[in-house]
Length: 183
Image (cartoon, rainbow, N blue to C red; front, top):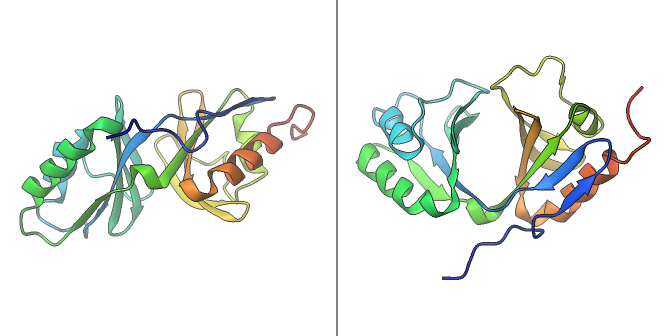
């Protein structure tokens, strides 16, 4: 098996905020209705967190579970942990109706950091960043592409499809250029 690589080779941009493409992360899309019996056990077994509430992300160390829609959760973990997590999900869910798929290689992840990181995203996303609560996950658009965003310690994490990673890096970098800060 070849070594995993990020979509843009860990691209970076330093402006009034820093933009960094994260290395490969493990991601599993878990589809199941919230009342499915094995769901809580499956998420706990895969990433060690409880089932996230609507529009929330629960982070525990390097792992996280995020609510994506009424019947979809994104599980984030180290890239090499997806096989074990898939086995744990299958064991916990048993015959309960669900769909789990590793989507690690279909996603690109960016960190936008610094004291003015929100300004980079305010230009691109229809999100009220002043009202974005800690632990809140938003599915939205960055210009013309689908994205998910949530706050991290030093700024924000943005996830998009790998196929638009170059476009997203261009958007974020252009929006973070020195001299383009919001008044």
